[in-house]
Image (cartoon, rainbow, N blue to C red; front, side, top):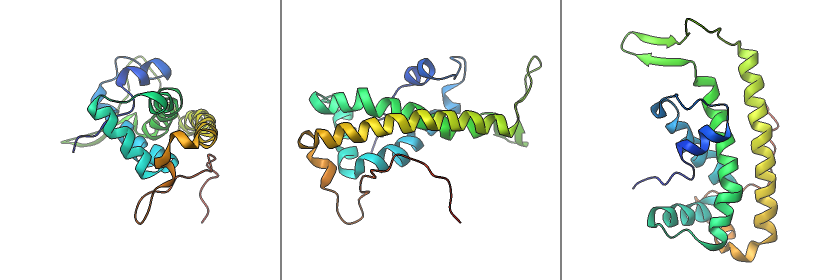
Length: 166
């Protein structure tokens, strides 16, 4: 089954610090990962599947279109960057794992990458809180939000990442 991505390459480039010259193959998988992990976590399996099938069918409309364009896309843009940034400098080739460094640039430290990830997380959490408020207020427009069962992902209503607890 084809995966319907909720955002395009252009959405990510226009709304983040990601340069337009970055090869799509370097980050497209992080859009899919962020969508399947973060977006599905906040809207649940049933609503996620409904939006995905509507996108694939070209029939996304009404409140589902508003939800996707106004709330889910900004969330996904920033969650994709959270997932991509730690890997941005690395490549795996036949000779092993390499860290890319241009002749005219300076590599950033881990703390600088962590700072960027945290800033993207703040943006993502803001849009996530707005999405949860929107869906909760307009719950009758999204019946799939509360119909998950068995092994489905149930929507999380907590938009904050509080770190790992060991």
